[in-house]
Amino acid sequence: MALTRLLEYPLLSCRVQAQNYTYPPYDLPLVEAYGRRFESVFILLHPFVRVPPSLSWTVTRAYPGDAQIAAHATKCRWSEVSAHIGLSSCARINQALLTSIGALDDSVADHAGHKALLAFLESHHTWMPAEGRFEPLLQPNLLSAFAMAGTDQLTFVPEFPQSDPIVTLGIDELARGSAPFPCRGTLLAPDASFLFTVDWDSFFTLFYGSRDFVRRVVTAHHLEGFFATPNTDHLWFNYSMGCATVTLSPEDWQTAASLQSRVCPLPS
Image (cartoon, rainbow, N blue to C red; front, side, top):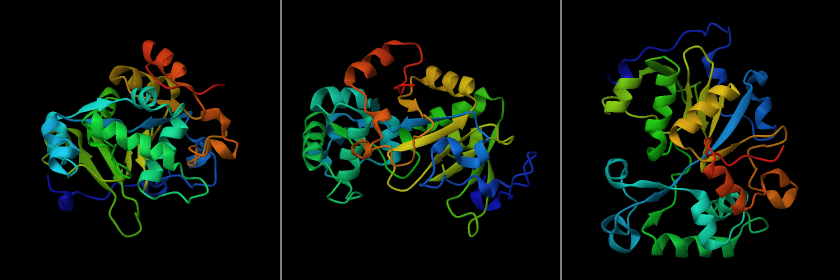
């Protein structure tokens, strides 16, 4: 079904328009978004993209296309990258990634971390995660969450709903590729019980919902990330400015990876 043929989604039963479910503001803790409608928010880290040598940077000099990623790539966890290059937290990996795309001022950039990250990528046939869009390697997992919730469709809220239409999309159509997977914006459950949202220059997707449901999805797909604490905001990479709650050691990641939940939990 072509995107242009889909109808705008009506007002949700919760009496809040779908257009209000765009990415949260930067200046508030993530848990306070959407009027605190959701019990929890999980920062879902976009995995690094491990490819066969034929698709590596040294051979192609070009980032693989989505079809190539779907067919040939596998996930590489942030904890694995951390263990190889010595960046001791989710925050520092994120800082190095943001430095690599020029998203940070020199005062907060980590050029040494960026250099170590590039060396790892070139020697391990691995690409950086996608930033500012729904990571191709995670798209099947995102669709599975809707299936686990017992719905066969989702509501897509674009980045700018004032100018672009809010539409319903079929899960099967997205899975088959007969409808294009949205680039960025928000994927919302029809009953507004959970959502996924991603923003420009972000190497993570926010997953809002009940803590039990979020944990079930994360566990089912061995996803890497952490639950936001009351003060975690969009700029959680900036541990140097007092966001100590996300400064985790690789040992914490490995311990978490051995658990059934396989998350990168934050201290309470």
